[in-house]
Amino acid sequence: MWQGWPLERVLLLFAGLAFALIFIQVTLFHSRQNFRHWSMWVPVIETPLFALVGIVLAFYQPAWLRLTFGLLMWLGLGGGLFGAYQHAVGVGQRVGGYSQPQNFLVGPPIILPLLISAISALGLLALYWG
Image (tube, rainbow, N blue to C red; front, side, top):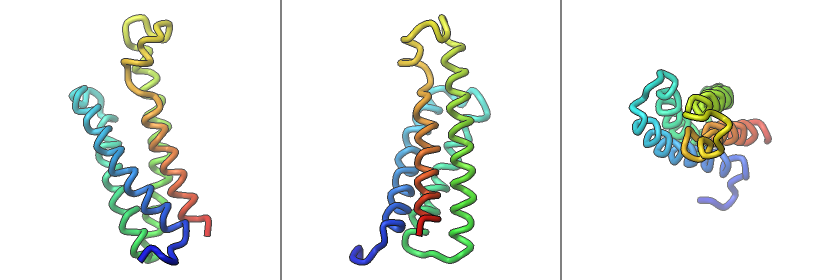
């Protein structure tokens, strides 16, 4: 089954599985904060959709699904950057703001939304490389 799979298909499957794992982590973090801001719902809604489309696309590749995945990955790329901005603002709102290095450790993780952007970029590379 795996023999003869091009790297692009393997990367699509990897991206889909990565989004499934990110979904779990993001949901845990944002539910812990009681979804205080509307934007906290964005990755909770989009990452399982990204995961499903990426995994299905690794096995079944109609043109409409490739187009859908591409649009979703552009959305994920921008959404991850927006999330990193929101998290950076959140760090600054903690007591002591940016002057307290501890806030970067216990505040909202700035890198996690950037991971969504990175995996989205990987999905785009996998989609358009071949």
